[in-house]
Image (cartoon, rainbow, N blue to C red; front, side, top):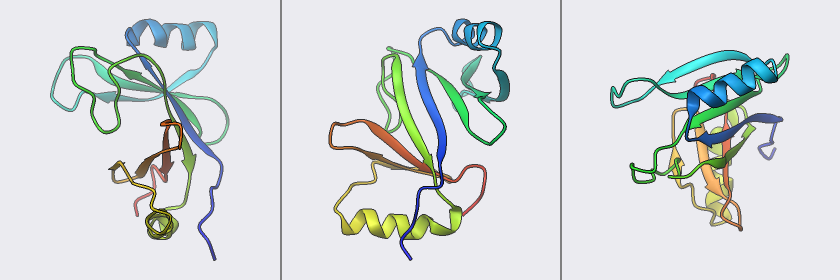
Length: 134
């Protein structure tokens, strides 16, 4: 059986003012903070705030962007739409990796939970099973 997409996982928006964006989404739209992520390099503050957008596991990720830092495989140096992540199961991840390889679609980055690819227009997509381990 072919691997399947099991729904929307999250949408990520890169912002230059993370606290200001958080205030808007929380105070104006009423979203609740689900998780906070510190910078990996020990830099003060947070690199990401995840906001709950419903009863399921879907979320909106506000990602701090910094024009001073070079882009990384899954970060851009500018604000705006950053990533659409679709939900997959951890058990199907190997099938997704095979399917993408068979179709000559490059996986541009991998994490414990997500495979990152680009669509033909260059938009970043994630196939994610967070928080479930593979």
